[in-house]
Image (tube, rainbow, N blue to C red; front, side, top):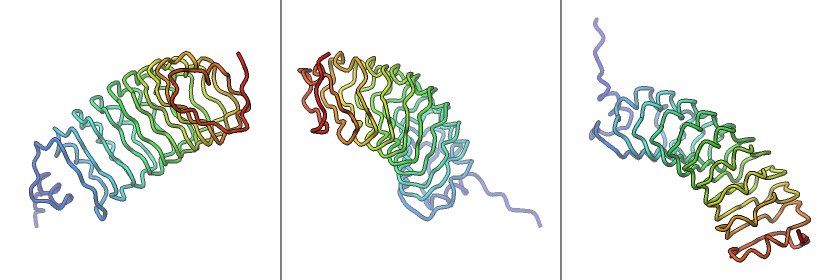
Length: 247
């Protein structure tokens, strides 16, 4: 007996559980549980997608074919069970926001450095121990949310992301911040609470837009008075035992 032919359209309708499938969709949100794995053919069914939300679906992988979504601008994969980001994520060259918080991700692939239009990266509440040097290529990145990981160090290339306005590394295992952070001329918010920092890098006082610093729950003993005297600062949270030194 000949096997019956099942079209991609029928397959995707069955997977999403929705008879109103439209190949021209630019926005898709599947916030639910109980589906099977994301099929490899998924991108072929939605070639025009610009916003894709797959939150709270209990997914544990992203198919390699994700890179075929060449028009995708926002990809949200929050609160799933993802442990590995495929290298093909770097093929999403139109991507502006990558939201993958609250998963089990242990590393970010080097290919992320290809996302030249990326403005926001939220990878908090994962299991990251480091971030790749290639992230220094993300010249358009404005926000990076990496709190609640186990990151031990930040590469010097971090300072190349001169569009950064918000940096959050709260609750990691950092023992130092790179001196190159003083090159982040657009930086407004720096959160490094609850780490193992012993000092602050030179040059923070030269960041004219910096207005909010949080470094409490660290091992910092000395804080340069030049930072405390910054007129742009509206909030500077630090441990009360820290002493000021004059530079």
